[in-house]
Amino acid sequence: MNELLPAIEIETAPNPAFTVIWMHGLGADGNDFVPVVPELGLAASPGVRFVFPHAPAMPVTCNGGYVMPAWYDIYSLDEAGRRADENGIRISCERIRGLIARENARGIAADHIVLAGFSQGGAIAYTTALTHPDALAGIVALSTYVPAPDTLAAEATSANAAIPVFAAHGTQDDVVPLRLGEQARDFLLARRIPVTWHTYAMPHSVCLEEIAAIGAWLNAAFARITQQTAQG
Image (cartoon, rainbow, N blue to C red; front, top):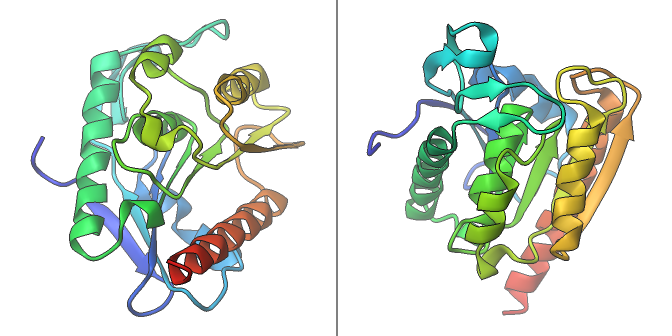
């Protein structure tokens, strides 16, 4: 638990002022979203450090026990409510907190850190951010869901009660159905968390239009935080 997750790091400029920790989906690894960085259209300044961690390999019940990179075990893919290993979710959240702490030690405050994730990685982004004790800069949640809503509702922190969220989903997603993404969105809206919601005519994937929208959202968030910091 004390060992940091291995990760790929990319900096858009020297001495980055912000960090995006981006979690991959089930069966993938940190390389999955590295090609997205130059496509985001981020401003030249401030610099951003992207951290793409690799999930550990473990048996995944819903895939016949096959060992693959995963943030937690999934017992069932039932659209009505995915059954997931809540202890495994907690362990992964703590591992992401370890990466947040390393960024803090490198001079990036929590409120300059965005958690992002696709599919199972997005579920970890949601859960880690909403239960984190310090205010974070935002969440980017792609083609994902809230894996344990009752637990999350009970453990959500006041520090991130108004964290801005970019959430997007494919209308043709047959892996994480759109309904689950909408349930996550509605979970956030019921808690008065501001959500920028997008849907795209795509399966369980990302598209160029979505990547451009993420980049615009990040640019706006970083500009707003930079201005607020300058104003003290």
